[in-house]
Amino acid sequence: MTYAIISDLHSNLEALTAVLDEIDRLGVEQVVCLGDVVGYNASPNECVELMRERDVPTICGNHDAVACGLTEPWGFNPIALAAALWTRENLSEDNLTWLRQLPDTLTRHNFLAVHGSPLDRDVYMFGWEDVLPHMEFVKEQDCSLCFFGHTHCPGIFSDDGAYSLDDDSRFALGDDKLFFVNPGSVGQPRDGDSRASFGVLDTEQREYELIRVPYHVKQAAERSIEAGLPHFLAERLHLGR
Image (cartoon, rainbow, N blue to C red; front, side):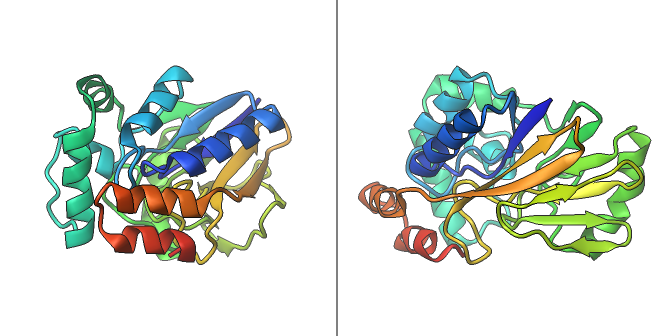
């Protein structure tokens, strides 16, 4: 079985369309979304509707929860807050309802999928030290792999440290270790590479591949500005930060 793992779409229709086109070209069998379908950018309804049309199993991210009113944006910086409130006001009622019904976690083929940490969508796991406290919980779920998002930065971690992975290269997961894997962000990369990022898991080969996809960044940025969102959100798309 092959899975495309996508995360942090953040209302970026241009990036999401490019990623889905690449997933279709690769012939991946199932897509799983780690959350934050909405927030920051200017196409929340279009991105939600693509997930709904494709019936993509999707987790509720922290921006999704705020946009649909499950939580309030406590702790959001002023720019994130402005975008969150704009998103809440512009989502259709059907799409708000869909977001409210999203689960906190998903389990598929011996892997756990979460947004932030396994127990809290708001927790950032940037490095090995952040991941380590959650390993025992994932083992207790009888899973040998945990996919997570939220940081917008790709990474692979195990109990013995962090692993490097070049773009478009395969990583052998093996059978003897528990790995935490972040596929990066589709709609707002923050690791200095402006291309959309996602991962592909091959469960038979026990291999993971990080894939980068160029998209029409200028068009997405212009759409954000035209919507009246903070200009910084458009600028960071060009920078990948």
